[in-house]
Length: 391
Image (cartoon, rainbow, N blue to C red):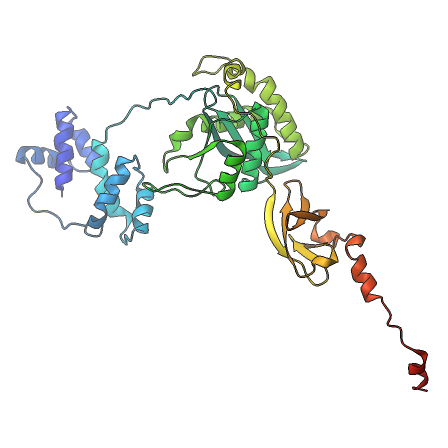
């Protein structure tokens, strides 16, 4: 049976000149049902029982999401469930269906930025051959909004530390920094970003932004097109670079090949939108870039470890020595993306190691435990008469 909203859809589509059979197909009803509704001038008087009772309390929230451009029923369901909705998705879809019919499609206006205004950052992943084995590789693509010049860097994972490292390598490649960096809502950069609420950025990402002097920006939730330039470059890398090069000796070799490919091919392409050679357009953008800082940002993993009584700390399944005077202390450690382990006591570097597997055994520097051994080997001197008394 038709609802009032169904009748409004029928009435609207009929005014647009849509055939009755097409209207019926859209609503999944018989054409006679549509004809009777038009002849009657309203929906059937005997209304079916409303199935939207559980949903009615969330109509306002749903309308706000629709106005923000969120039309995916699964996404809307997740949002209203967070607000306490206990119903299913079927009633929600029934509520949204007539609204979709009346939704006006908006033409997409391409957003262009001024030179050095914005860099867009995004991750992609692909299966390729590394050292003779099929391996999943993550790669970060950073694209300048004005010139469309981009840089990408491959890594083993797409966590915060590798995200920051990828941005830094791109800044170095471009020779400067943009005024703002637009990122996706991944935890590496954004802790919380809900519609109508302020963005909560990852503190380390804010620290990186301050160090390099750019303003962090996050895409609007559920608006994939916001970062369209960079997402297209992720596809470009997959369809061009990884189609041309299918095997690499190592991850380092992949990144070396990528740097050469970027300069010899990607930078020299003629961009279809701006109708210019990317490298030539970048020359106009180069002067507007902010200078790089004197020292690069430290992207290593930051953790804390308690030193055991035997002057070792445990890191990723293995144990590493520290100077014995720090036994029992809580020390700061930094793990570089290259596996270099640095140990600090009150910002002073007190030990360095290279990470090793558990099977390789504990990592010990003899000088760390020299004092510990000398104290344990000391023999107490006793007068000779003490021994004579025992005879």
